[in-house]
Length: 96
Image 1 (cartoon, one colour):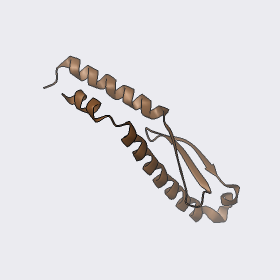
Image 2: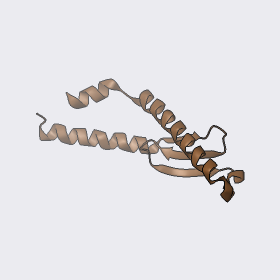
Image 3: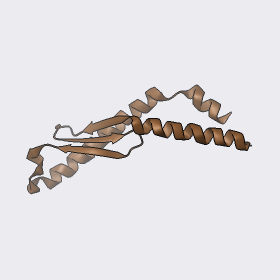
Image 4: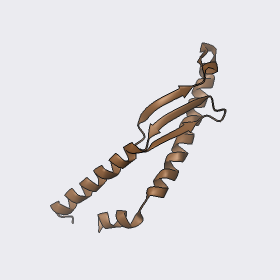
C-alpha cells in the first residue's frame, strides 16, 4: 500500500508529465495534404489549416474525410513521440 508521501510524489510526477505533453506540438495531415490538424501531446486541439480549395460548401464530405485522416496521422505521430519519451525505469520507480 502506498503511503501519503509516495502518493503525493506520484501525483507530482504525473502533473509534470502532463505539462511536458502539453508542450509537445504534434500535427497530422490528410493524405492529400489539404487539411492539417495541430494538437499537443495531451491530445488537446491547438489549430487547424484548411486549403482554400476545400472551403467550398460542396466539399463538406471531403473535409470530413480529410479531418479523419489528419487525426489518424496525428495519433500515429503522438504514439511515436510518446514511445520515444517513455522512460520505463522512471515509470517503474513511480510504482515501486
